[in-house]
Amino acid sequence: MRARLFTDYWSFRIVSPVATGTIVYLLILLINNTIEDALESFISDEFFVCIALALIVSETTRLILKQFSKINLNIPDAWKVVSIILITVLCTSLLVCIGISSYFRYALGYQPNLSELQPFIILYAGLTIALAAVYLSNYFIKKASSEMMLVEEQLKDQSAANFIKLTRGINPDLLFESLESLITHVQDNDADEADNMIDDLSMVYRYTLSKNSKEIISIQEELRALSSLAQLINRLPYRKTKIVNNLSGSGYIIPGSLLHLIEIIIKKTIVSQHKTLTITITNEEKNISVSYIPHDKLNNTLSIEDLQDINLTYSMYSEQQVQIKEQDEQRSILLPLLSFKTEST
View 1 (spheres, rainbow, N blue to C red):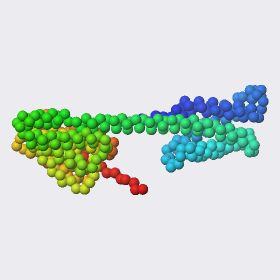
View 2: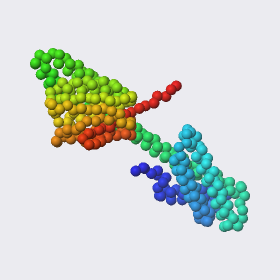
View 3: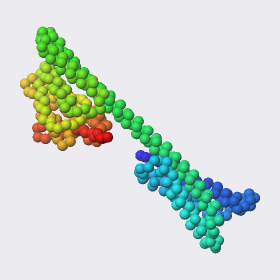
View 4: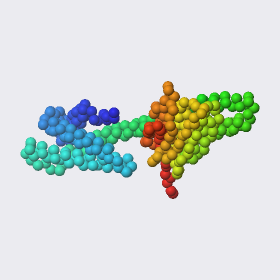
C-alpha cells in the first residue's frame, strides 16, 4: 500500500486553511489599519472570507500539484518545480480575484479596483508558494525514500541470487560420488579411467566456480560444460545419461542454470543400470526446451518448487519464468533464453 503524504490528511486540510486564512486576514488589517483598529474589528465577515479563500487556495494547490506529480515530464526537476509553482500561482490568483470581486460586488455592493485586489493577490500568491514548497519537499523526500528502498530491494535480490549461484555451483553430492568412484578406479589400478574422471571433474567445477563473475553467458559455452558434466555422470556407477543437443541459433542464459537443471532431473530420476536417460535440448519460441521421459523417484518427484532458485535468479533479468509442461509420456522444462542489445557509438 502506497504511503500518503501528510498534506493529504483531513486534519491538515482543515487546520491549515484556518491558520493561514487568519494570518492573511491579520496582514490585510495591518495594511489598512493600525494594530488597535485591527484588534477591535477582528471578527467580521472578511475574516471568514479569508479563511474560505485560504481553503480554496489550499485545495487547488494540492490538486494541481498531485496531478503534475503524475505527469512524467522529460525535464530537470528544478525546471519542473518552477513551472508547476508558476502555473499553480496563476490559477490560485485567478480564483482569489474572482472570490474577492464577488464578495465586494454582492456583499458590499461595488466593484473593487486593482489597488484593493493587489494585497489579496500578493498574500495568497505567497501562501500558494509556501504550500507548494511544503507539498513538493514532502513529495521529493517520499520519492527519494522510495527509490532508496527499491535499490535496497534490488541489492537484496541480487545478493540472494549470487548466493544461490555460488551454492548451486558446488554440488556436494556429485563431488563426493565422483571422489568415491575415483577412489575405486585408483584401487583397481584403472589409471586411464581415473585420469578421464579427473579431467571431467575439473572441467565441470572450474566452470561452475569461474562463472560466478558473469551475469549471463552464451548458451554454447554452457553446452560445452554440460558435455563434460554428462561424461562425468556416465562414469559413475549405475548412471547412463545421453544429452541430445538440437539447439539452433545463439542466445544467453544465466550461468549454471542449464547444468543445475540437468542435475535436478538426474537426481529426481530412478537410477537404472540398463536404461539410458535421454535428455533432448531444443528451441521452443524464446525458450530452451529440455525434454525427457520421466521416471521419477517415488518419494522425490520433480515439481516447480525444485526450480525456485533458478526462477529467483532469472527474475533479475527477465519477466519470464521457468515452466514445466507434461505431454503424453514426455516432460518438457522451458528455460528462458535471454538476449541483450548493444548500443552502437
